[in-house]
Image (cartoon, rainbow, N blue to C red; front, side, top):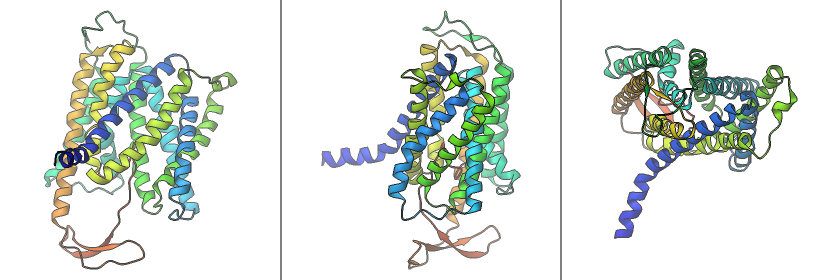
Length: 378
């Protein structure tokens, strides 16, 4: 009996353990990357190596596990993968690393919490999200988006006094230079990140082989970022990498953040939903703040603390709004029609939409991947 109880507890706790462990993994990536960038590694080269490691790790699993379900490549699909590689590996990662170099790991992580709000804005602009201010869920999302933006502006424009921690009272400030420029780069990185998820969700509706899609995106990103590096970096010495911190930063980011994270996010999201996954994001910021103050002698400012708290409040408001909308949508779903349409693994369900009309639609089940999926964020 005790064995069964402990096994049951472990099964329930697995998603929490996985997400907490993943936040430590992300935090390590930010710290190691910051050290590598401070030592002079080009962020353009780092992006190339990161995506090369990720593609090399994911490709074998994609080839073996998805050989029977991988759809044919069409011109439109190739163009979507090309744009995904441009948005994610090239624009997002280069801007994020450039912003990280000019600011601090804690600040960069705090800015990343703007993702759900950015995604909501893009969805509204693309008319894929309706703003019905009468609904409480939509009110929460709009309010959360506004609060998140205010928090980002507060962190960017106001720093205030340094918070003297017990173990960091004698630290020297090394992050004042180009703080505003770094903040703008991080905002653009988050915007590109949100756009990446948005297009990824659209692409995955037709390309139902998630591992293959991520492998192709990472490979395409490697090629594109290599071209960008040749344009931006004219010294061949920047490509030199040995068994040092630069290799660790590239391998760690590619294996942990671009490979293992995709799998863990996909598995947890399939069982618990994307709102559950997104709710753990602020934990990474806390871990990075503690690790950064120890390892990097990072100063923590009162403005940064207040701004980060405001961003997190906005984040949870957006997520709560999405949760309430999901509850309402689920309450409108009638009993599934008995019987299964064989061949496509489709189950026909009856849905009552906003116009009170009844329609039938297929329901599909497949793992969604994340830094790392838009579904559930809007």
